[in-house]
Length: 412
Image 1 (cartoon, rainbow, N blue to C red):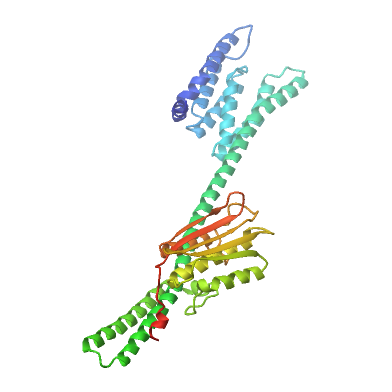
Image 2 (cartoon, helix red, strand yellow; image 1 turned 180 degrees about the vertical axis):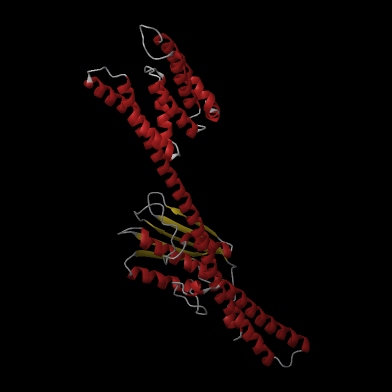
């Protein structure tokens, strides 16, 4: 069925000519019948010419709306000047008027309106009965109403199509803007993460440099090869630190430096030891939060610790923003042999689909940032509504079973 419909739409001229052919045949028969002393209706040639021009107009109305309107004007003129009686081809002219009003050519639409308002009165005046003005008025009003209705319907259809087209254009533009904002949010979040990882790694590299420099003075009796190796560690550490700062400096810009993030470059970054303090702060702000620590706490890489802290911070902030009044939250942090597992969920009665387009600080894409952080440390994260209401954030962050603390190595 759809193929037939598509075929008919690809060939509008044969389709319009075919469905209007019975009306043309009936009108031709009436014109020839009126051409007699009993049915005065003007010369037959004029009637047949009117029928032919009307048929041509309706056949090309969709492929050539301009010529179709000119053919309609010629049909009306011939109809009046040739004193042709009203025949069923008048219905074809109403179809052309509707098509012109619904089409993109404004001059054709205005011309169709003028014809709809004037042609009925010309026809009524041409065939008015002498001494009977009442019949002239009635016939003119009735024919005008019949002619104007198709134009009104066509103009309404054109306005409705233009409105829907504008809505589609705006929707497409908003979609493009949303995608662009998402890309910008991802880039900004990656820049912020790169800065924080820089601070973490920079701290470790700085400790390495200090320890290597100390080793140069604490082991003067070691062989020269050891001295050169330790010196190489110091040199490499300094070079790596300078290169890393240079690369991160490329990522930063003025907007990132003015970020609403409270952490400043170079400041110590939070870790798992600060999670309990974070929970207490959220409780003080009015959110009922339960805190569970499972497993044996141990040292984990600072990048993993920072990621876990940020995930919990983001989840609790979203709960405060979106869960609604009276909501409670539950945070669980579990140490395992493979790493760290954390869960942050709430029983909020707000919308199941949270505002994923905003970061906790209101300036970016928070959930996208969660996924980016977890991906950078090689973990897994699950974000989504809970059955029955609320929201749940669960993540697994890999970490070795034991990580030596570099700050204590130099004291041994």
